[in-house]
Amino acid sequence: MTLAALRRWNCASRTSRARDKLIQRLCDLVAWPENRIPTFERQLAADILVGLMRTASVEHRIRCANGLMRVHDAPKPLLRYLARDEIAVAGPLLENGVGFDDSDLIAVVRAGVAPHWLAIARRRGVTEAVTDTLIATGDPAAIDAVLRNTFAKLSTYGVDMVVSRSRQAPHLAAPLVARPEVRPTQALVLFWWSPFEARVSILRRFAVDRNVLITELGDIFRLAAAEGWSDADTRKAMQVIERRQRNRAAAKQSPFGSLEGALASAEHGLDRGLIHEIAHLAGVKPTTASQIFSDPGGEAIGVFAKAVGLKRPLLIALWRALKRPLGDPDSTDNPMGRTIYVFDTLATAKAQTVLRYWNWSFTADAEAIDRVGFDENDLDISLARRNAALLLGRRG
Image (cartoon, rainbow, N blue to C red; front, side, top):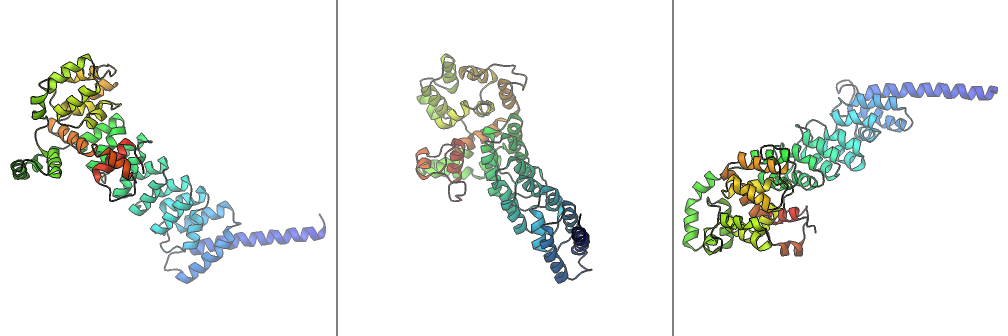
């Protein structure tokens, strides 16, 4: 090495050591408590650091990020710069840093990648605005972390997004059902693509009787009956609440005489016409009955059978008529056993509430949905039509 080259090397080495010391000292200064350094000086030090960080080592950037975690008035340019760094630097800061506001975190989500989303999802006290943005990424790991974070808050729209996305990611159903923000309407849509354990949780938590509504609206039933049930909206609403499940008028006109008679005939095979007849006798629309009878898991069939007052042997007969796989009825390791478990453990009144909701929610005018389309962000679409569109997979 020539003398000139040696001098240049020594100069660069001294500069590097000076740079290291400068970065270390500035990292310490920006992390000082609020009462030790004026806000303006902290910001000035941070502005200098942002320029130096572009060539700083990972160790220096981690040191700076760790120092900023406990600073409430952390300078925003430096905070956001480090928050978008590689996850070894940004992770602990995003998960535990106290200096972020919602706009900071949302900006990082929109500009970041999956590991950064996961760190933010684990933050204590993350707000609805941030969880909405995390859920909108569609990343299953980030969504799962949000759902399992008991200190995170979910908006109604956020829960709706998770319900929709859980159709392609069924493992999200279990942590979603446990969330306090979930409403019965959302849970009973989620039911259709949830695994068995989540379905049982949904029924235990959201299947309720209707005693209060029946008692308090008794005079409305009498008034509507006196008017001949002439108002269609009133009739549909009251059908969700009333005590009686089966359609007595349909039984008088049916060639089978009763629901049991129609099910006995089903032993020879179920065609579309017979399914329609069973639906009318059970007090539901054919669309609802078809959805229930085609349920892959089968637990919806157990809900139906309990709601309409069938005995266990008739449930098994219906199961056979539907050509569903047989199994041990006393074990939940098979679809038949899981269906019978739901039938045995669910009270009739609660099963009726679930069946009434399904019938109300999933019998929206299919032609109208196809014509208007479905947009997850459309807050004006009616709840029944929105859920029908979600179930049937229609999109605008």
